[in-house]
Length: 341
Image 1 (tube, rainbow, N blue to C red):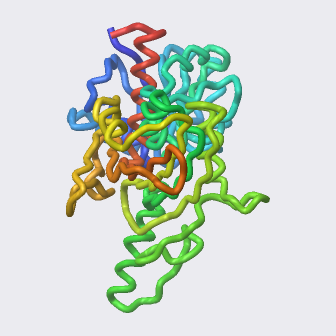
Image 2: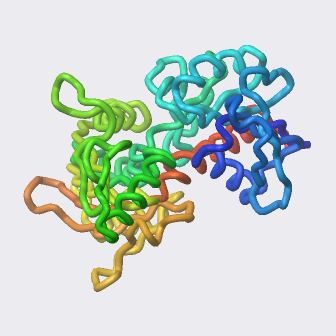
């Protein structure tokens, strides 16, 4: 026996990826619904590589009664209106927006890191999916934290345009084309030209000079992994279509050698260690696109601080940073609580 699953925001990048991953991982499904805004009603979307086509249903009129799980990839606006309705109708919501992440009654879950926290979902019938850059980082950090306790994290991100949706990817393509043919370059989605450039600005600025994306990495890491860890982040948009990269410097309470860290990461769930210390012996965003793993490379000791390590972390932000993590949460929910299939 399987589940009745609704994917809300099914026509967007993340929604489509959720459908692909549900099919790819053979999630036990009795019925699947693609749900979207009224302008997408009737649009046909393929359910992974199953050959099955789904016609989009209207979110405004969708009745979640009798549905087991709703994967929301609709943004904070529609989620604020419809996620509580779905939850009240008995459907467990797994939300990819930022809306509920810091709600104390809503668990914020990365299954490899804090699976036990999912038990708190019954307070609101809602589970939050973390920010894409946070998700991949805590997967890499948790096994090292367990070994030697991380006290401080300094991270610089190199985030792809797909993190800003289809409009971000389109802008990179259009600006790149314009530069090659000599047309004027226009910035619409981003604050500055993204083609052949990097922009140290993701989301809105806060009073302290940081951006909301940087704030998310700080507070979400604390909620998911350990509230005592100090985190500082600089988040940068780069001219890449898919795949986020992060340069991470860590300080530990106890000594942890680079060799030992590599040994730990090699066995850690969700991690692929590729660290050959030679030309090409590391992973880049191009290589991780379409893959489910979080890749770690360039593990080395940082001699400028006591008990310091540095590493490079890369992951497909549409998968582990969003859709895959949401499906893994659904799998965890099924194993621990719903128990079907």
